[in-house]
Length: 146
Length: 245
Image (tube, rainbow over all chains, first blue to last red; front, side, top):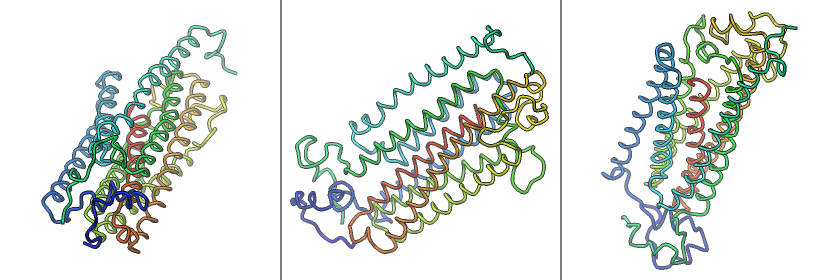
């Protein structure tokens, strides 16, 4: 390997130079491409690829054939669960967030909880306006043709 | 030669290194992506609000039912599934490039980055075709504003039973809103894919020139990889919101 040997005790020198070396390269894991660990990681990547493809195909088939026979709410709930499942695989395995330390994971994921409120509040608002407009034809005349 | 990480990792908050065990650049990439996630969600949630506000809405199985070089529009969702698959595969080749970087395998990084760039360009070409196709059906930003248009102009976009009962105002308003959101959101996503392809080309040139080999690590591939995966992640949500729900 090209980077040779390193003085692991001299962290401060590395810190003042390229601090990425502390976490990514020289002192961190470097294994051979042909090592069993490396092959296991690649096998995991292809396994996740297979899972993501199967979920996508299931979603498309659901969109094509189940929209006529299933209640819209149930089908949409299934779509949303599958979407969140797909994104969890991408974030945790492809983006390696699953390999980061616990508090870094929380720093990235906890702010996303705001979306729960955003989605409920804004969709409720949209639905409330639709109801209001339909029950008050004088305010917003849907049926008048010009 | 292999070093174990645990042997050199001091206690968190002991000073000298990040308690997150992540470099500054990677933390900032994550926080940028977090803010970008809020931008995309603002778009998608306002799309949802408008949809809930509307009495009728175009049906994705009708809007997106064409495939290049095949006559007739009876292949709903097929083309967009192909686009989704291309983007997922380019995300896979990117994670393989990152893995090759972990192993200091320059040839592997070059090979997988090339595939990622090809996937990105293929996706953008598909998107260009889809936009052109919709534009030929008169869809664009601020299109379908005329409530006096005959119902025929909406045939491509609605289920027949919805088209039969909806008022001209409902058809005009919802189609106009639908395409404003569609072109804005997929356009913003496409701009991200474009910049991602440019970043990928830059790091490919650096890899070929041996910049990262001299540096001793391939962390730049990881950082650009995070961006690229995020673009794929956004598409997962765009796909659900526009094509499935």
